[in-house]
Length: 157
Image (cartoon, rainbow, N blue to C red; front, side, top):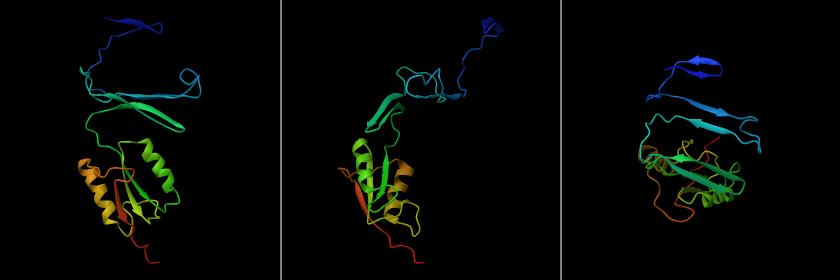
């Protein structure tokens, strides 16, 4: 049965799974209060009861974020060098405190901003990264630092 929308007659369409759509809005209709933006999307999943999604939130100094996740997604793996000038170690520790379920692998004496997939390769770091990417496995250590790796020598000039 047709319906009226915006002064036009339109054919009624039913939402059918699967489909795809995503959109973002940023402007007076959405922002209005403090330049907020709205982001939405269709995750290609049918509606279920109970929902496969659950709400998650993260709050830290200067950061408030909220969204949804799916049970079973891997946790957060952080890789950090103690001498990284681009992302200082103290900041990484603060980020780790704000992410209580994350795990952090620290490269003692590592000053390279990219701790993984670097040249020469750090087999210790790459081992943690490869296990995480292949299986979602995180280091089992507790505390702010879950595991440590030695730094590799700087490449010869």
